[in-house]
Length: 460
Image (cartoon, rainbow, N blue to C red; front, side, top):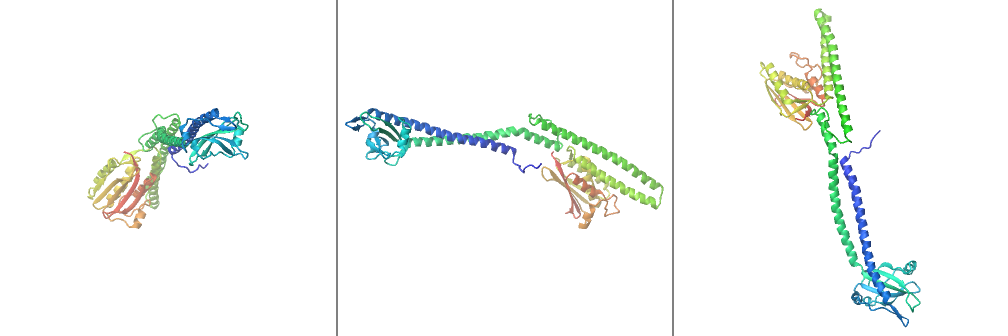
């Protein structure tokens, strides 16, 4: 089954999901609050207008067939275009309103009403009808109309009170602004809280990742920390996997040892028997048996290295091995007068078994001492958290490009007079590959050959 290619961070997905729902909820809540505040403000405004229409209704009379409005004491209604207006009107045959009496503040202006005023009044007899309109100066008005019957008059009259709604609109805008700022601050706080929550919630996952890395690098043998209930089964499965891999590696090592013993004994017998019976056939058998022995050693060494790289990580000090090799080879090549100069950080470690590293560095250093004239230089440098490089330089005759290509082939020897099997550089190459490293031959600035080896690095 193929899964979609989605490599986004789990923490980022959790944060975005939580923020999406939170910010959506905050936005909806802010809109609802603004609408509720506006409706509440309009209801209070309408109550004020209703009080004015009730006063008009209570004080309006009909004298000699004429509608007479009461003398209201509202000073704003007496000042022209003050923003506080009232009007007593009646419906005409075409459904429009005609003013009978109006406040002095309207001067010569009549309040506008919606075209469906008749239908609205008829739909709810006796109930006031609120609507929005414009005033004499074009200002927005909130109006309330109520229809009533007056004694002495056959046709009903309509009492209308209106007031400039600019203050209430200003209050609503101020509330919306304050609400937006408050919810923005709340949203910022939620963002911080969600990020903190996700970080704290996923901390055990990061701890598990670090501990698994410690096991892989050889700093620990198994996961030992206590994890939450959700991660505990995963930790147990990882420990079981590590134990299984260790068992597999041990079985591989046992099989390799058994195979080495089973093959080396018959080969030794063949070499011994051939040596006791000299002749052309014995020489052929001896030569082929020695070739078989070299091949067996080569493949068994490679199998052991492959098995070791699958086990739990081990660490080998680079400086300690180079110091040991330089002392040993310095004594071996003392008569030749080769000076070995090596340098490596004390905190530099090879991620692998010591025996494998001894074979890699020992073969490279022995070749440099063997073909160098007087100087051999070894440097080990850090290439980052996972790799390091060693260079072996000598001041010998060096190699051509064709000779460099031949040197890594198994059993090839350019100098037949020198002791050895010709497997040294081939062993280095194959062990490096087994550990995921690299091996390269180049020209040395000392005039001879440079061997460059890149290997996995373990933490100090």
